[in-house]
Image (tube, rainbow, N blue to C red; front, side):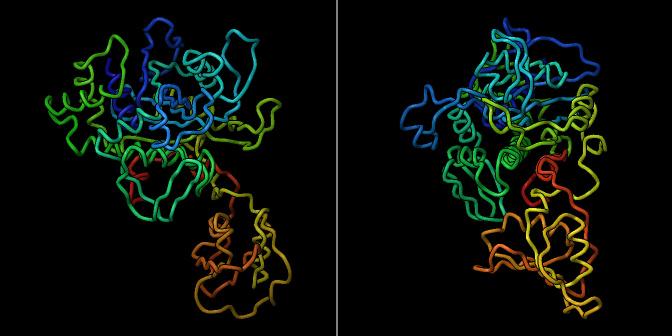
Length: 433
C-alpha cells in the first residue's frame, strides 16, 4: 500500500483533515482499466460548516453560507517507480458530465457532483472526465486544515505585493511569512487578490503544498523510524484513515514520499479554453481545453511526466491573463503602436512621427495603480519595459518607447497558461520564479 503514504503526506501538506476511504472499501471508488502504472489519489476540500463551532467559524473566517460541495479538488499521481509526483488542480467550476447516479444523466460544475452524490459520485465523475482510475480519495475540511498546519509548525508563503481579501479575511504584507493554521486557511481560500479567481487561488494552494512538503523533508519528518512515528502520530490527531491503514502503514510508507524533493514534484491546472461558458441553472462555468486536457490525462495514464510535453503546454506565444483588447493605450512610436495594435491592444490616437528620436533608456509604461492588474499583460508584450504607476493617471496606459526598446512580443490571452501551466515544484518555492 505504498500509495497511501502519498495520501497521508498530501493530507499533511494540504493541512487537511476529514475522512479517507480506500478504493477497496465498500462503496469506494470504481476501478478502471488504465494503460500505465502508478497510483492516483483524489484530494477534495469540502465547503461545509457543519460541526464547526461558532467560535471556530469566527476564528477561521468561515461564516459564509456553505454549499456542501467540493471547494478544492486536486488529482495526485504517484509514478510507479516512486520518483515523481504530479499534482493537477481541477477548478471547481469545470463544466463536465456527471457520472451515472440517481438523477437523469446531466452535466454541471464539477464541484456539484459531491452535492448530488457525495464522495462516490465525485470520484466517479473525475474518473469519467479524465479516464484515470482513482485509487484513493481524501476528503478535507476547514478546521482540519488549520489544525494540521499548526501541528506541523506552520506554512511558509511569500508574496511580492500586499494581499488583502475581505471575503477570506486575508491581510498579508509583501514579503515572506510563516503562517499559522488560521492565516494559512485564509491564504489558500483567497479569490479576490491578484491574480484573481480560482486559478490564482489554486496556484497559491500548490505553493503551500510544495513548501510544506519541503518542510517535512528537510525537517527530518521521515529520516528514521522514530521521526516517522512522531510524524504519523501528529497526522493521526487530525486525519482519519480507512480501516485498513494504521500507524505502522503510515510510518513505513512515509519513507517513500520522504525521498521526494521539490524537483521530483510537478504541478499544473487543467488547461481551460473558455472562462465564461454560460449554462442555465449553473451560470458561468469553465470549459477544459479539449486537446491540451486530453494530452494531460493521457500522460498521467501512461505514467509520464507532464512537464515539457508540447501537447500540454500553452501556445508558444506568451500567455497573458487579460485579453489585449481590454487594455487601452497611447503609444509614442508609430512602429511599436502598429505592432501592439496587430497584437490586439486598443491603441488610441496619433503615435508620433516615424523615425523620430526615442528618449534614452527603457520603454516606460505609465498607468493608474487602480488598473495595476492589467499592467503585466501589457508588460509581457514589451520586454524590458519599466512600470511607472501614477495615481490619478486615468484608465488609458501611456507607453513611452525608449531607445532600449526591444521588439514587441506576441501574447495570447490564456489565463490557465499564466497560472496553471505545468511546472516543477522547485519553481513554486519562495525565492524562485
